[in-house]
Image 1 (tube, one colour):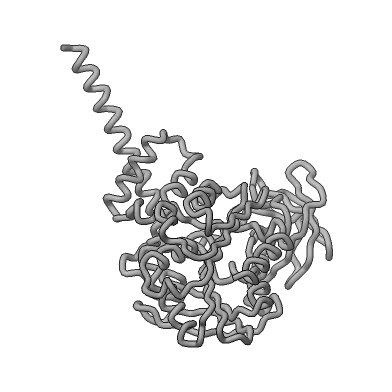
Image 2 (cartoon, helix red, strand yellow):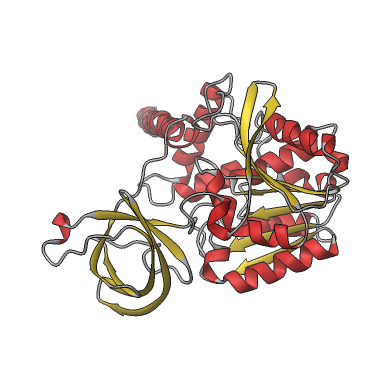
Amino acid sequence: MTSLIVLASGVLVVVLIHVVVGWLLSGGLYRDALAVRPRVKDLGVRIREVSSNRIVLEAPGPRWDIGHPGTLGLAWDHGYGRLGDVIDVDGSRFIRHYEPVRGVPAPCRGSLEECPPVEVDPYVFPGDPNDVGLVFEEVSYRSALGPMGAWLVPAGTPEKWAVLCHGWTAEKRELIRVLPVFHEVGFNTLVIDYRNDPEAPSDVTGRYRFGLSEWEDLEAAVGLTIERGARKLVVGGCSTGGALVMSFLERSHLADSVSAIFLDAPNLVLADAIRHGTHHLRATPLMIEFGMWIADLRWKIDWEATNYVARAGETLRVPTLVFHGTSDQTIPISVSRQLEARAPAMVELVETPAAGHVMSWNADPARYERYLRNFLERV
């Protein structure tokens, strides 16, 4: 009897520990993923030396972005530059090709902690479609929550349109990289804001919903293109923008108007993204699952509904191009591989070696644009 009591007490303690840790983890999940808040700049990089075509960067600790292959932006207060390929690595210092865009960054040869901070920016272009030589118009479309902003980049062919969605806490600027290809192939492109963006109305829940409500905004934007004559329509999204696309395809009466789909590092299994993002925590897998279960009880996340891959075999009925980096630390590449396996007749997956989250273009712009151009010309 005593041994049974001891065993039962031990089991109870373990359960209580998992419940308490799960409750704490659910709070962290809300704070880091569900709560609507301004994006915090990651000013963890310092400039040691800089010239008109070369820059030396250093960070106080290991970083995945400072040595990322290809083309990146570099942002600081009142200035912007563009990083090229890595020339050399000297300990914690990365020597890269450099192109000034605006302003002059301050180099620092003293203590690293005293150096002015800068941010490595994957969007590469600091402003708007003018940065890539494209004329555009600031427009608005009306969603159920009210007016939403958008960039309209005309291409002169009234029948061909694309509607593109940025990712979680990102900006329209995220899509500037791909606009020249859409324009070249003749697509008028609408790059949209949607609910919970800084200048857009808030969701009624006050939280990010990962497509479960935001799809209504995409539907409204698609409706605008149809009013303007769209007959050949591509919808696309980066990261969580992909969740909007898939939710729209599942729920909207306008889904049949879509001719093709473009996705980049799509966040299509929210539970997998959360698990992927908690691998560094000192918590057991069971504690993570408790945290996710409690978070669902508290905020009705609906893990099943935000698993868009599970229904992709029925949802994807048109050609779909997917880019995903093999070194993505935010959305595991397994998500896109599962998507391809669910709908192999529709999905073309382009894996980019060593690319981070929504950074396949950055790693190899020419390759990325070749795949995208060929895809758009086919559809």
